[in-house]
Image (cartoon, rainbow, N blue to C red):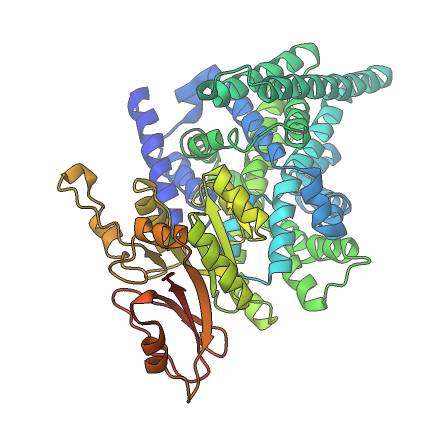
Length: 594
């Protein structure tokens, strides 16, 4: 493509298409992005990143990696790490070092890499990442213990693994000088990166804590100031910026009375436009001949990483834990490499190319090969492996309720009392606070956000109940979870909107999911019943006390909500689903006051 505008627009369109495809096929987006880049670049010759950006390619990749690392470190909360036990800590420290020390010598001997390049490669392939782990967990549905370990390992190891790669890279560059200067340069990089990271993180935390920036500028201000700290650190100590942004994000994430959740929202837009486009561009620079020329040594490296390094790191990291051999086996199998590995390898390759470093042409093809093979093989086989090991969770029967109104809280508490898994999500802090005070599991925020996918275990929910008054957001939530969980998984209250204005009507797709409980059950009516003293009551049916007896006793005072089988399965009443209860079933209803 000779016209750069056409090329840029094409990259954007390819990015959206790849994200949409991954959404449909439920595979990590990095896979179609990398394949698209390879097809558009070396195969068809439609895209040439070096020709398109010229000298700007290196700065674009560098800033993009800084954004990725900053976003990853923002999720690294110390209390979350300790809450998931020693296994996660060990995997992200001891396990990462073991993988590094095994992968490096294998790459040296099997591929003929120099020791410096082999250790850099080993450091890069220690990271997994939530962008590839979370979509896989949704499909595999492992036990909650395994799911939590893998999810938090992916979140925590991104900045740690990238930091290890930065330190190795700095050592490689520093060793080109005298020994005294080497230690000086290395110490200067660590010192400047650490000091800049702490100071910039603390300064930004004070700005956010004291609301010194208008709300609408917060995300933009944090992003630009982070990039400023990144480049400022680099100006003082070459290549210390990545360490700076990693420490800055960690500091912000753990600083008291600083809300970072809203800051993470900027990543969702950037990941579609900037990050997605970045990986198409990076993949387009790969030379197929370079991959083919890796030879048999590449297969040896892949086999060792997947079947030797990972199992050994998991086994040693599990010391003192009570995990069964089946759980350790599944943890050993699921470890796909992701976006950070691709970005960091491309960034360091560009830097080393400028320095005319030998064998740099081996780094990117081998890292990208590890990413593609681990994502493809483990995505296609993990369900069968989990099933064979007996660790795949049963079909989810839990309920996610969107909307934390008084009726929702009453329903949630009653279902929890009946041993049903329930969680409430809402964007209203006061409503969520009330739910938490009543002992209900909650999520504060938009349940279809990228943050929710990282922090909520959505695999336990089989149904989503829309009980909120947010008419604009309800259809979006419905559409999102209809795809995530399946058709018929989302049930919503009737809007019963009397307005005839077209702009006030809900979408047809949303209206098909309406009719939860009954035609007359609207948000306003249920809220009114509760305000006037209505209660939610569970009654067990029997041969003596049948549904007819129940109906005769309560009459018009009852609103049927759901019926629970003896095995615990819940059937919600809807406009089209009039559940026929049997003996020993439990009937849950809203009983209006007299």
